[in-house]
Amino acid sequence: MAVYTQVSTEAMSDFLRRYDVGTLLSAKGIAEGVENSNYLVETTGGRFILTLYEKRVDAADLPFFCALTDHLASKGLNIPRMLSDRRGEQLQTLAGRPACLIEFLQGVSVTHPTPTQAFAAGGALGDMHRALADFRLGRPNSLDIAGWRALAERCGADLDRISPGLRARVMGELEWLEANWPRHLAMSVIHADLFPDNVLMLGDEVSGVIDFYFACTDIRAWDVAVTHSAWCFENDGTGYHADLGRSLIAGYDRRFGLSTEERLAFPILARGSCLRFLLTRAWDWLNTPADALVTRKDPLAFQRRLDFYAEVDPETLLASA
Image (cartoon, rainbow, N blue to C red; front, side):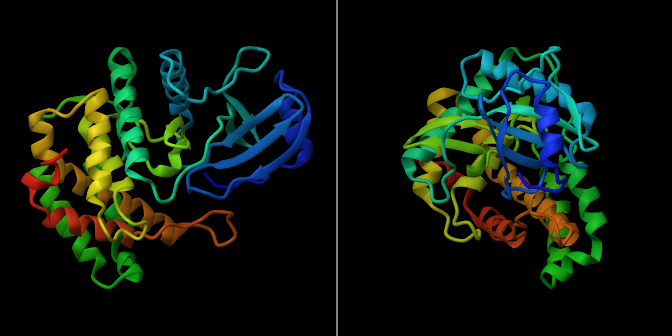
């Protein structure tokens, strides 16, 4: 979440008149994240999230995201829906951007999860994968292994502006992953971005899962690897916490589970997760406007995770999970 597009009070009030949500009381830009412009909106009818979709989100994909969140919410999962206006339309335009008004869910995102919270997050991911078994729509992953190469080439020599030697490290890892990627594993629609800031917690329970704008069809176990790499390290990518890793996988196994083949491939999938986020963070680091209300994230935090997964013994990473 972030704010790239400023919306005036008058324009926001006019926008909200399309809905049965009361009149505007306050609106505050949300700085976390890097993808879209987001506001916490309070009206006489309650609290909502107003999202304006920026360049990385293709407006043609928004009906897929609407259908996905509606499907998951209909299964009883704590997923915020995109609200319909008085004419029954979920997708709008505001300030020249595609926009949606979204349900607000109570909860906070944790920065230092406990094993119990990691267990709950793994369970929530398993519940999503189970609920998606009968979801019939799909969306290609624009940030799959082919997308990583394209993004690496776009970053080019500028990667070394972030850290000397980073370009060579990225290209070497990319070649290794292209040669070893486990393309035979089960596919599904996945969240693909289940970081702690996309999981709302009330105490030790998951109260909501948000931000499905990278959701796509890809290797299902890669979704688990993304979550593992996001939850089980210090924020700077150091200090792998094995207790968090065990708890997260145990929570996932309780609700859905990894196959033997998925477990054997897990370190490779995790390396792919690290390279994907290293590259998107690098691109944002190099290209985010200086005046944007947005928190840039350190790409090297995922190089450190990548180094861990490249060196870990594949037979022991999930041995006690």
